[in-house]
Length: 330
Image (cartoon, helix red, strand yellow):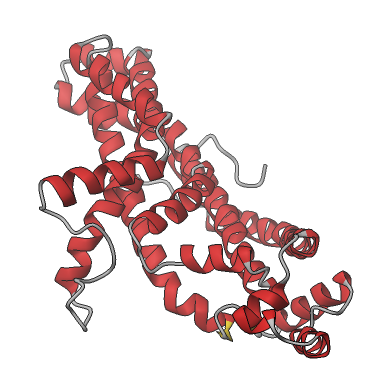
């Protein structure tokens, strides 16, 4: 008889997390405005560009007033926050368009890259972890573990540059960057898929070591437990023991890893997008930071913080569903 899903406790947990997220997001956005205000970069000069070099002080002061950066820190933050609650995130001074449009144009490509990479890391890390756990200390376990520990210390941008050199320049089998071919004026599925291979693989491989090591340790510990030994003693096949008993128990620690890897995934995605000229939010983030674009910086930070909070909630929900001993109301 199947276990009834605890929808009520799950909803209450999600509600508590949502209430907790409100002050967290408020503090985070204020911190963005405070850091931007303390930055040595002048948003007015960044907005004016080369014209600002010859503009009079009166014109610069007028531009400063038009952009709203002449107001006190708290006033700027409060104006942005109250507008954001109404769905208006303001205008990006560096992109010269509404912040909502900047995010809408780029977010989908960033989500595609991150989701594909996360799927690669989970599937490949789980598969290799299970195979390595079957024979701890064997040649496969030693080889894959050595590679995993090496990849832990390898920066994502370095892996990206290495992949471009080998697959795009030396072998010439995959495109080096961008979303479509240079001579193409349209975006097609085939071109996007081929251009996605390298950045998604690099980002996924950069996240793979943690999933591999967690699954390997979890499955190895599960194989040594009495219930699994009992299943073997009853004559169950090794495949049934491994996939039906050890894998489920061994996957529990990995479920908590999903949420904790979201910040690293976001950081890695920004680096990978930059290396491969992927048209996500990386370029907008860099330009917003160097130009002290208050509105865009705050909106992007809110999105990143919300993604981290949702990732933590997802890992807790998955862990609770997989392990009946976990109480959602605890």
